[in-house]
Amino acid sequence: MILRQIFFVLFLFAVFQLKAQEKSSNFRVGLSYGFGSEFSNTDYTFENHFYKAQLYYKIKETTNFVYEVLIQPEINFGKHQLLNYYFVKPETPNFEQKRIEYMRLKEVREYVLNVGFMVRKPIGKIFSVYALGSVGPLITDTETERMSKGFAFADVFALGFTVDYNKFRFDVRPSVRHVSNAGLGSSNAGYNTKNIEFGISCQL
Image (tube, rainbow, N blue to C red; front, side, top):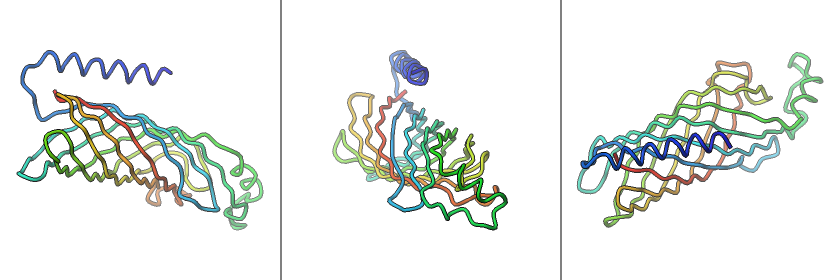
């Protein structure tokens, strides 16, 4: 509830900034909410929902395409459970105890800073489609059989569709997401999820 209030306040601030300026710029600010789950498998479950603040910057516009950089601080709430009892191998220290521990349902919280590059194709005056690739560091607060607690990375590839209304833009964004720690931790199997995201932004 507190997070929703914070996002609402940030969005109101952006609207007031919008009204205070007569000229538009290459910057756009927004908020989004999304949710998803793991790809079907027999090893684990992972469900998540997340909130993002967004800062867009248009770096170039041609006749057919618009190129943008996107910075997205994110907080991600996940629920994870190990399904495959034998995923934890006997060579793992205290493997029997860890099997019991990891098979409990766990809540996982991630704090992420995504930096992405977007290629947008306008369709008429108000519609557009785009492709987005982003990567960023994150901190996870929970150890699981697939991920060590602490530092990791989130990689996202998304395709999206937007509708413009005045200076506002409404966004629908299906995506795939991979989280791992690049071998920096003892466990690095990571999570793979499919997600859908809904956002609104306004031009400054």
